[in-house]
Image 1 (cartoon, rainbow, N blue to C red):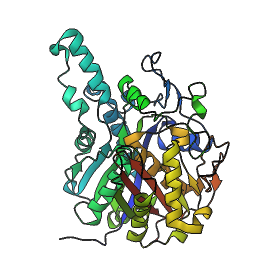
Image 2 (image 1 turned 45 degrees about the vertical axis):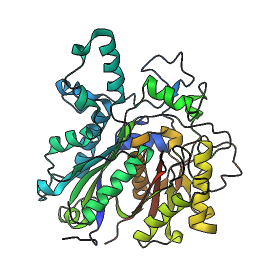
Image 3 (image 1 turned 90 degrees about the vertical axis):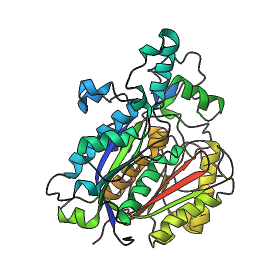
Image 4 (image 1 turned 135 degrees about the horizontal axis):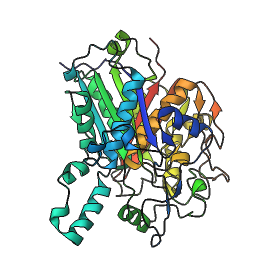
Length: 417
């Protein structure tokens, strides 16, 4: 039986990012204007043109995972387990819960999988032979093992899947999980995105594409979305997960509700492998789709958490797309990019930014776009420059776009019975 009218709410949050480990740690760092970007410490960068990134330096896997189990997981899996622990505690899900395990699922997206494990064991095999490859190598690198480990930890027997849509991954995972609950295939879903692709090969690959900032002498100021002197994005790592519940399930157990997912849009540019469509047509349609599916007018939107990567083309075309959707109202809607503080978590970005968007709604504070010094005439919206802004947020959009022309927009609404 297909059910399309079920409402879906968010009752738990978990986040690991370059700003810290934990929801409050991230939120306070974000509001204080802290940057999580610094010099790369994990490997030698002397021969690389880009020497900065957003490492999750405060993360200690032993705080969340048995020491003997850590060696079976690449970092993106460890991040996912940490975030799932946070959101389960935050939601108090097991308290007064009566939802059957077959009605609980996991959908964690990962953009690039276990690239650190691939590089490590490929080199080890070349140097010392195949017998030095870990028997856990394959489970370490497969993207869906983040969902797999989380489902096993909590005994969730419902839908168990993975999304891999580049930098739109986290938002697609949340949107797809929302649809799973909405149509009646599950009552509870852990959803979001994770990424741990900070390796020499990945930095080299993005560098030769000229996608990364080379502001190596000012790492904290290198990520500057929508600003005139932006010169590329900053690679980062981490994860952001949310606990989604069918409204009746959440109300029945007396859960705190951060917000409701009211709509979801997904489109494809069908234009270029890596460059966004210069007309912004499908990005605009993605936002319109999310609004229309939620029965929300552009005038009702209080905040847009932008994809805002700090690359010249993305920021220009996203601005253009917002104008297509909102018209003159575009100049009245606060738009900020939290990537100015975190850098770009790739497949994890949408998940982390969903958490930040929900907190903005819950706390009535819009995070700033930091490092905004010189306005760009082609990016002329209200980007909440440099300081967070107190404002009631009843409706918000979170945008994510990825290579291959894949677009996602999630629409959040403050919960009202």
